[in-house]
Image 1 (tube, one colour):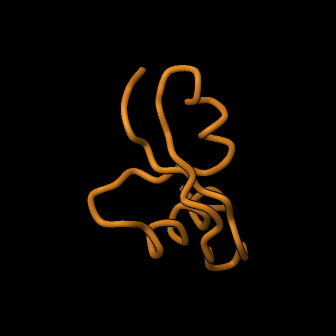
Image 2 (tube, helix red, strand yellow):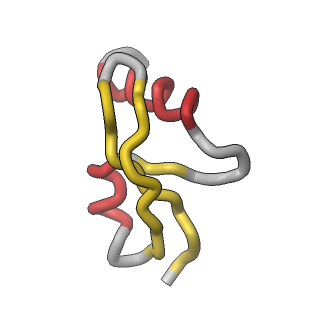
Image 3 (cartoon, one colour):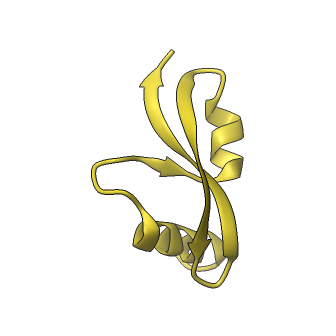
Length: 60
């Protein structure tokens, strides 16, 4: 698998918090009806710049 999705995931992993699941804005929008997430705020993502991210907290 190649392309923008892989580059975004790799960049997010580099800045991720150990032991947490961090999601992109698009994934957060899909998850928010079923999961509780908290905003981590913008993080620097390689090749993407600043990106708003969320941390998965729990299932609703």
